[in-house]
Length: 191
Image (cartoon, rainbow, N blue to C red; front, side, top):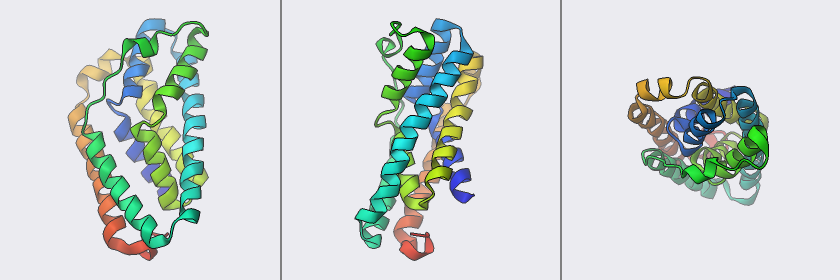
């Protein structure tokens, strides 16, 4: 259950102010049809994070536990730094209309999530916990916790949310995970 809770919390915090959350705001403002947007975000995230989780579950089979410990430790520390860098999104990413609201959201959100912080975090969390299902469920839930309210309540939330504080908290969590991975050794972290 630790994998589920950590994955949910870290990704929910990391997603605040992320480019995919900004994309959710733009899509909601443009189309004003929240339920197809939310469903498309859910499906795009589930597929994207499912692929990322599969890669993360596969990585430990390729690497020696000591090398994996260093890779994960450095990855988590890099994520801590990356989260502190604000994201921006180009309006062109959110304006594809050829596929309707659902299709546009599905394609755009899936592509925007490729190589994004939360996708990379999913790979690292799946490698750390070796609990594919719980990590993918957790990271998807974290994405929905951050993006569904963004779609439903939009600007009212964005103006009141202390984005920098939330990013600092998420960065601290990633930094702690990185330090624990580097100092704790493979055995104490469940690798």
